[in-house]
Image 1 (cartoon, helix red, strand yellow):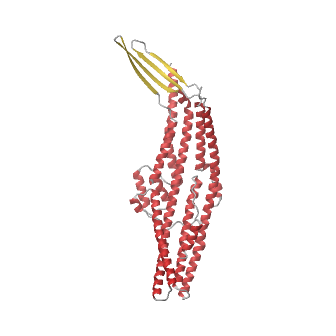
Image 2 (cartoon, one colour; image 1 turned 135 degrees about the vertical axis):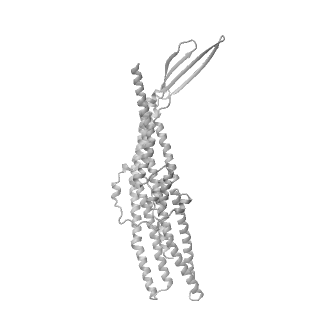
Length: 469
């Protein structure tokens, strides 16, 4: 008797220990996300609001770099914090899958009156599902696989939030940098228009000549207004991405210009060196397959035997000895043999296997495509920096020499100045597109594909036309 009690106690203790492992999964998911953010982006995900505020004040006290923008987004953004809470909820749901259901205690009290006498019957029953104990290892394996899915999904959200922050920072800095040059175009056009007006009034300019200069001025005015709005829009988009309130947004200072282009392009071998099985999207597809495979074993057994309950019974009746016993409830598979359930589980696993294969193919393709976009953006920006801008500057310098020698007029000189400034604005746009593609490539290498489209032909043409006004 004592031996049976000891065996039962040890069995229950080991069962509760296994079930308790599920509770550690939630903490492990949070730790995994924090470690990934720290190792990948040097960011600390803190739930301490006071520590977060101190970190924000320190970062906003100086011109914000792209890396600091990522750290702010992962520390402060309510959208990102909401994602963390959603992932924590999913982690808790996964942990719940690995826990045993509570025993059910039933109490009944029956009163019977007969010939003026009162008889009292009291029944006490404690029921447990034996199948849940049998299936517990399978449930724990399923819960662990689900936790892995949640962790990888959290890491993918970290990559997405970091990429959005970096790209928003690039757009905001580029817009403010370009605004300076749009103002210079405006100043040159205004000077041309004013001079043309005076020369027309003096009779030295035709109406057509004056109208051309006035048209340049009108277009420059419209371009400046649009550039100002773009600077405001991109800055506010950055504020939203980082999660800055009004006071913090007022503190935000951005660098005067984008970072310089890298001295050399990344070799294409960076794609070949990236292990596809380490990408988040591939690992997430594999984790889904493991979850369904773990669940399939549980489903296969449960489809045949879906009920096995053991109930301990103790009945007390007035004037009668106490009755003790047990009740065993077994489900009999007669009408539902479970074949449909088993087939469903098998097909889900098969579909997940194909999704893993497709994810691998898509990952390889996305890497090649994004690298091509990155390399094109790099070459395009390099071409503007090393070819177009220096040539426009050379032309402007030569025109200044000719003007000083009285070989050309002031309007030719101003036109050359506008051409030079327009090429600088186009170079800034090309540099912006490169850094957007660079952020997208980094995200794609980690396994969260983000495509940064290149400028359209119309945008390129518009950039070239800007210098001709």
